[in-house]
Image (tube, rainbow, N blue to C red; front, top):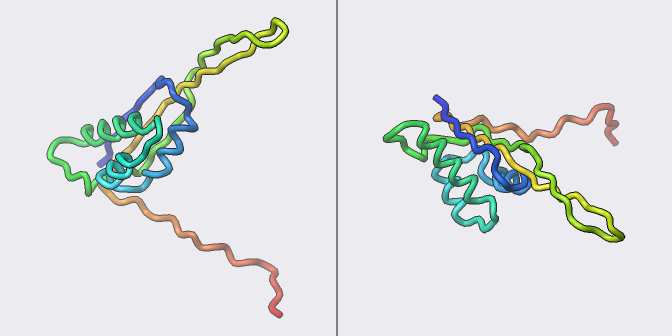
Length: 126
């Protein structure tokens, strides 16, 4: 069973949100929430709120240790373009980025990818 939550058109850069998502991907909901409580970045409240929303979408009486973040991705939304005065009467464009965040939870633990290195080909033994 899966549960999903979206946060769309949020006024923060997608790159800042992705830094937080890298810390919690593949973890259980309980462990991800404790990890997020220690983070001091500005995108933390957004990720924490979306994660708790996805967990509440899973249903009542659920154990946060048995639900895992299987997928979490962030995408860029529309960009708000503003002008700022620049040197010699010119204008400089300021881009205020927006974010679309999606978190998918599952009650099955995600499979770990093996980090085996591929065997070197055409290598001569000395």
